[in-house]
Image 1: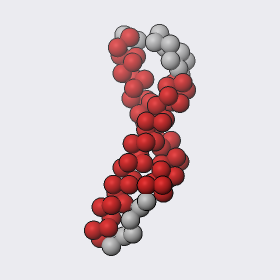
Image 2: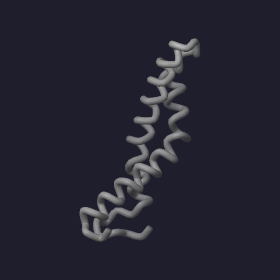
Image 3: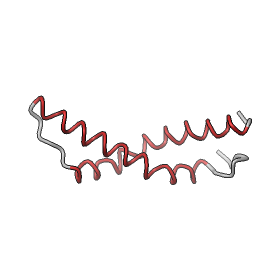
Length: 79
């Protein structure tokens, strides 16, 4: 995708949102690990959840960036 009238390209927006998306993935993984204890799985430490969120945050961030970019384009009237 090229630069839209808002001035942020898809790549720049992807990098900007990655920190927030990876953080959300880490929180969700940690909570999933806590819920897994109910069925006998070992607890997932916050550090492990954070380390797992680095690669797992990439596809989630791609989806979030597409969604936000679409909202920005709609607000600019280019979509």
